[in-house]
Amino acid sequence: MKKILALMLAVMTVVSLTACGSSGSGDQGGDKPGDTMSLTEMADKLYEGISEDQLPMMLTTTELTADMYEGVLFIPAIEGAEAVSSESMVGSIAHSVALLRLPEGSDVDAVRADIEKNMNPAKWICVQAEKTGVIAHGNTILMVMTDAAKYDTIVKNFDALWA
Image (cartoon, rainbow, N blue to C red; front, top):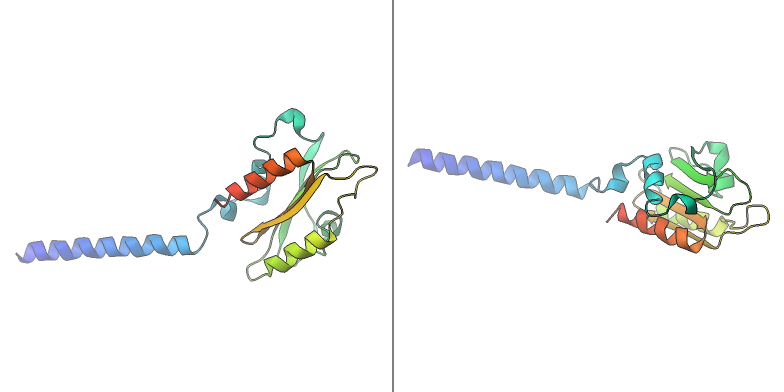
């Protein structure tokens, strides 16, 4: 009888420890792909579902240095943040996608609103982006300026990283 009771207590202890461990990891928010991917990997995922011939010519993803923030994200650099941009290397193609990951404790909504307020969809020579938007999930902000078809796919793919 004592052996059965000891075995039951051991099983209950293991089950309770397992349950506590699984709920703790979910509360930290690190279980979504967007929380753990590098920004470059994320930029690649954003274009899934867009055929090669629909992508802008000479599309390149570049890590942003502090002096590049204002030209791409329309805000000053933020200490501790990281960012990438995905743009055509041909100056007359209205397409810009930027990802910004802010350090913990940042006011994500304020930064997102600042980018949205300052963005310039006519930053290219003689062309203008058809559709623009700034979306945030967690500490990651997406800024998109492009045509409507690509915009919808890019935003859908970004949202899916946190679904």
